Image 1 (cartoon, helix red, strand yellow):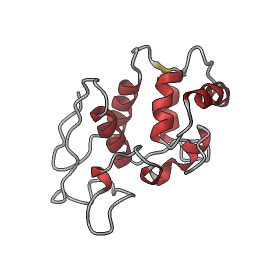
Image 2 (cartoon, helix red, strand yellow):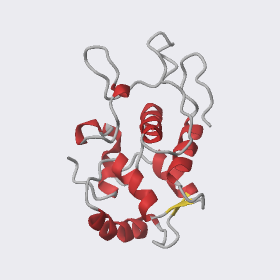
Image 3 (spheres, one colour):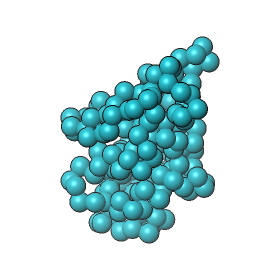
Image 4 (cartoon, one colour):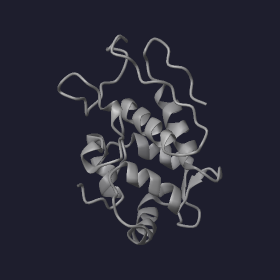
Length: 167
């Protein structure tokens, strides 16, 4: 269960990453295998078919140093989510929060996600949303992975790592 948002601040980064991993690790074995890792890939722009993912997955595992049978271990996923290189999957804390919220809303998994910080919250304590609406709205109302245009900008390297065509 996610901690309550106090004073409009997001949960800490490690908590967000752990909750997201736990949501995706459907069998609870501590690693993301092909169907589980596909959720991360789709959150970052992979829009291929199941057959394309079946072809992409072994190569991605080889690049990340895991076996397709064992999947990507939790520690490796945590590093991947912090890696802002061309082959990483870095997300801001706000993006992690939005992916977690949107993924939780679309699954039957019982993960409780607190409300996003409100506009009255101290803006300096909460990360900014990179996809904020120019009219003052927030991108938090749109699903992060629902369409190519809503993929977080910081996920470009991750999309490349997962074979996404970038839109």
